[in-house]
Image (tube, rainbow, N blue to C red; front, side, top):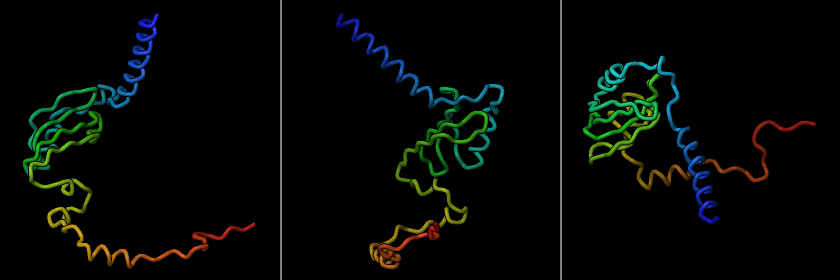
Length: 141
């Protein structure tokens, strides 16, 4: 009896965990997919070297190296070619800052992190809210 109960609990657990994993899959209809070569061209225009593109859970999975030589693994929606996930192994070249949304001219000359003195000056420059004072429009009625 205990074995039957344990088997039922395991099966229910597997059913629910499988449903959670399935939500991470791409669900684009195959008829809407863009060719892999279009994705390859877009990445190569960014200076990335594509080693392979395969289909995994309905998404395009791309592996290769970025323009700094760091290895990456990315997941793209096959219909829109929008990135869904990006993993990069930084091998001492570059960092996450190189992938943040910045204006093109800021990427090349990104500023170093602020010094402790600059952080203190920033903290002192912040306005201090007055206690008991409302923010926003006053309520009527």
